Length: 180
Image (cartoon, rainbow, N blue to C red; front, side, top):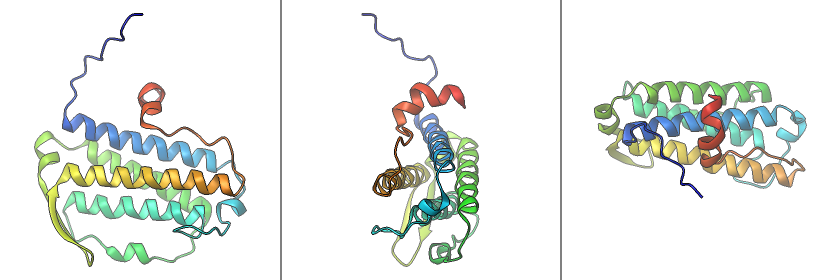
């Protein structure tokens, strides 16, 4: 058996963060494409979880990505009010919102240089006041989205949704990258 030769592309912190941002967009878009084939009643069905439905969990992911993008950009104080937004968007609006926010996040991360990706970012909220390198916040938002994608799949199984897409990072590496 012959070992697979590694790609010649140089791997460093910047390329890894860009890869994660592109993966996040791919995984969110794949999840949304799958959910679009399901009845909106199921997406809005009330369930006992940290959020009252798949739709509200998706909205939380989207709002989280928007908030952390503001932190990453360091252009203004991030609006923590977005987390308490109880506006009743339609399922289609939430689907669009999450894909649009993931695209905007990926575009921003892909625009960063090695020096800007390691530069410190400050965030002040009612829960914490911290300064960390930008890449740590990028990892945080990607992990946050991954966590909730898993939660959405689990909620989906509990309301009868099956054959969920594989949104694993390895699946992205093997199949998703070539499609993007």
